[in-house]
Image 1 (cartoon, rainbow, N blue to C red):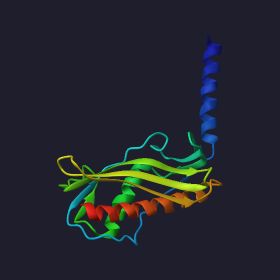
Image 2 (image 1 turned 60 degrees about the vertical axis):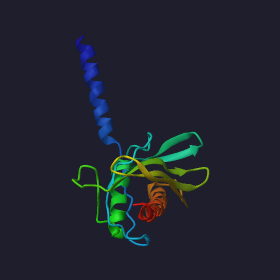
Image 3 (image 1 turned 30 degrees about the vertical axis):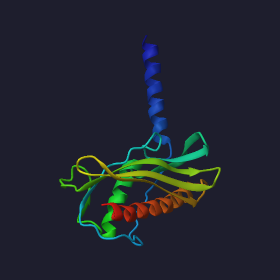
Image 4 (image 1 turned 180 degrees about the vertical axis):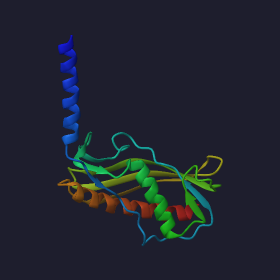
Length: 191
């Protein structure tokens, strides 16, 4: 019995030590466009919810699509936060950078919102067969009563590579910036 307990303890120790010895993942971020956002100025207050996303997009790993129904994650690379939270922050920053709204924020920021922006991440991945970074977001603008005032799907594709985290995230950042600009310009005609 003591032998079994010692063996179990040794296995746990080996597992913990091997976890400590693994190389840390390279960490990447996406940016918020600070210029080239063309839209009319709005007077309202907008609350941007955290987008929903299917797994594995709803995490901090960089998704790679190797076939129409096969996805994996990029080895050795991760986002600086869960992708939905990261995108929510960058969209809010894009609205702030464009200076279009009276105020923009998250639910719980204490804002009395004229509208809320609810959205879903459909794709945010490197597509190996096409060699493209693909970003596709479904966006809905809701009234305070919860009625859909407007809805649209936004997408962008940018050539990229999965050779490493840097190459993949540069392409994904460019595609993301394109889509965030589209959303801000579109919301300017809807809010």
